[in-house]
Image (cartoon, rainbow, N blue to C red; front, side, top):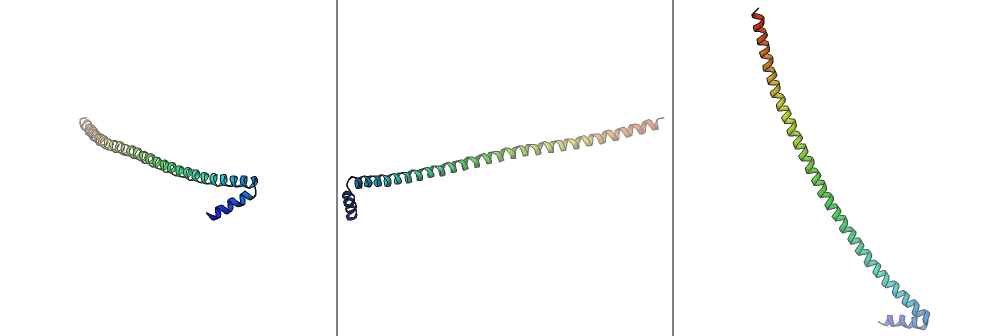
Length: 111
């Protein structure tokens, strides 16, 4: 408290100029404190937004991966279905080929 009284006494000795400089200094200190507080709040908001963006990006990536996995599963099912259908068709063609050979043999024997 003694130091504050000394500062006030010194400012008072300089008259109006001392009082004005003291008021300007006090306003500068208060404004600096206010700006520091505003900066801290702004940085906290930025951190919160960054976390929110990261969470939404992660959710979007997970959803994308799930959609791609579903399409891959469906594609594999279609490929398996086509493969099994081709095997059935191959068997049927072999049967037809065997029957045609038998018919040709019978026709050649019947001459």
